Length: 154
Image 1 (cartoon, rainbow, N blue to C red):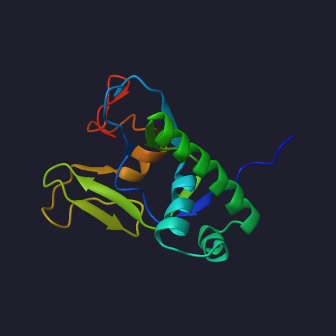
Image 2: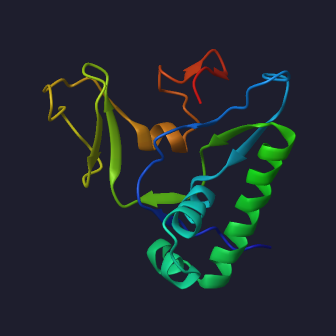
């Protein structure tokens, strides 16, 4: 029997829910789901140019675990690219270092160290969605990117 998965640390929720191809076969391909920890590994290694040791320390996992996560992420990313699949970024056992919110009134994106936000610092509106929950729970509560069982915006 396998061990329980330990939560990985992610800096913050991605700014997008995924990527979608365009061309002749748009909408006729399957989706590939990139977990949030896989996204974070690609962000740290390929985008931020950190070493595997630095990225493993930041995510609080061992270097071999980081390598396994990176390998899974590369396979998923290359599959989506070569086969023209929609790439969704969601799910996984993660903990956020900073939390992301979006104000439904002024549409501003907000980063906050606290897990909850009561009012938008820009317009004082209380109509705020947590993007962290949106990414982790496959978007079932967000009205902007989940409509009738299909992702309208990715």
